[in-house]
Each structure stands twice: as C-alpha cells, then as structure tokens.
Length: 375
Image (cartoon, rainbow, N blue to C red; front, side, top):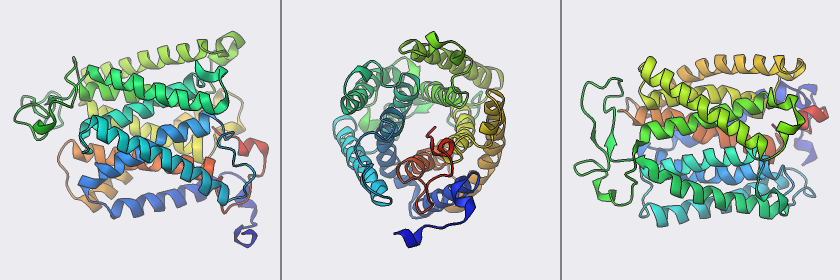
C-alpha cells in the first residue's frame, strides 16, 4: 500500500489534511444522499447510521483508540477493522431497538430515541470520561457506558410527548392549532401505543437535549476553560457535573431566547444549533483545532468558535440547496430533518471515522504530535 501514500508536504499538515478529509467525506455523504429517497433517508438509513455513533464515540473519545486492539495493523487494514467493529455493534443496536421499541418500523419516535442516545453518549464520554465506569477495565468501561446510555434514554424519553405536531406550519406562533401526530387521526396513529405521551412536547424536548450536545462540544473546543484553571474541578465526577449543569442551563436559556423571544419554532432553533455544531465539529475533528491551536488558549478556541459560526452560515445555505436539488420542496418538518440529517446525522460519523479510525488514509501520518491528537 506504500505506493498509494502521497508524499507532498501538505498531506502531513493542516489545513491540507482537513481540506482533503472534508472533500472525501462530503463526496461520500453526497453519494449516499443522492441514492436515497426521503422516506429511507429519514427512516432506516438515518437510524442505522446514527445507531453506530454511540459506539464510535466510545471508541474514539472514551477508549481513545486503545480498544479494540488494532494498533498492530497498518492502514488501511486498521481503519477497516475498527469500522467493521463499529458497524457490527451499531447494526445490532439498531435492529434490536427497532424490534423492541419501534415495532420493527423506523418511525420518527425511534429516530428521536437514537438521537437522544447520541447526545447521552457525548455527555458520558466528553463530559464524564466514562465515569462511573472508568475504574473498570477499558473494554468494560465502554460497554457498561453504552448499556447505561440506552437505559437512561429508555426511561428519559418517557418524558417526551409524541401525540401532536405542535407547529404544523413550522411557524411560531402557529397560525393553526396543533395536529395529531401519533394520536388518533394522525399519520402515525397505528403506533400510538409505542410512542411516549409524557408531559413535554417532543419538539421542545429534542431541541433542548440537542443544544446540550452543541454546548458540550463548545466546552471541548475551549478545552474546558475556565474550569481547567482549577485541577480540582478537572477531576471526575466534578468536571462532568459542572459541564452538564452549565450546558443544561445554557440549553434552556437558548430555548427561551430562540423560542420565546425570537419566536423561532423549536425545530428551527434546533437546526440553528445543528449548523453551529457543523462548523464547530469540522474544525474540531477534521482540522484538529486548526487554526486556533496556533494561538494561546483560550484566544485560539474563541477564534475557532468564531470560524465555526461563519462555516455554519455557509453550511446553512449550502445544505439547503443540496436537499432542495435532490428531494425537491419538502413539507415541514421533513425539510428541517433532511438538512439536519445531512449535516450531522450523516457527515459527523463520517468525519470521526475518517479522521480517527482511518487516520486520513491514504495520507501519511501527521507531521507533528499535536496534529495527531484526537479532539
């Protein structure tokens, strides 16, 4: 495979590696998208790919490449082996969940369940560092964390109410009354017994929970500043509890500002956060904190956050154009969910797999130890 590895200097350094990785993953995301109709795109494909993300996050953030033991393999065989491991576990989780929770049908309730599992895994890995299971062996800590994630979300999602589509036109305030979603008379009434009917509208609960993720990744970009000023606060579970309290509160404030003050419909507020995370994670995963890492912290981190906002703006318009070109004019909420799926549901796991599992193959190893570090 040596003859496939390019030798140019840009292949070992940022931003060349990030640009190459973005091109590879974007091309793959586009190929997948244009070969799908909207039903499969928002159905089985999305839940199947997103079911792999908790496993992927445990492998990259939780286990930090130490498990499964594939370091003895050269690329691309290492990337292939790790991807196969992720693929198998994610596929088992997907179809087990479909069978036990969704009546075998990839319906919206199950999609929301899988998204919430991704969020909980981000909190458990990036925020809590696999605590309280970090005292166990490396494999046990990861697998126990995954089991805990599914259990917590299995109970927590009972607080969601899927009976109604609260903003049928996608406008806030809505010019029409809420319409049945899973309730009698709605398009998913046949699955009414499966979907939770808790106290909080599903759109609002999902938006708040996803904003917890967006803010958690912001803390990661900031290298947990200002908490990192105190060694006592950087120990678990104090760090995890502090980060979660800040992100949960920040997500609630974002919801109040977006929905109550700016009159954004909750899923549109969610999509604003998805666009921000799109920019943030491109810098964090593909560009490995470049260019902000060239400056002292936290100035460099704030530079990256500012760049993430600019990328978010470009991504907002670019992804909208792609979805409109391929899917045509979609009704609410399919229009928002299709764009969000392309941005993070599809691209994010591809970025992490290519950067962390495949290590940008066929590019050579990074030029410096700093560039080889995983966000």
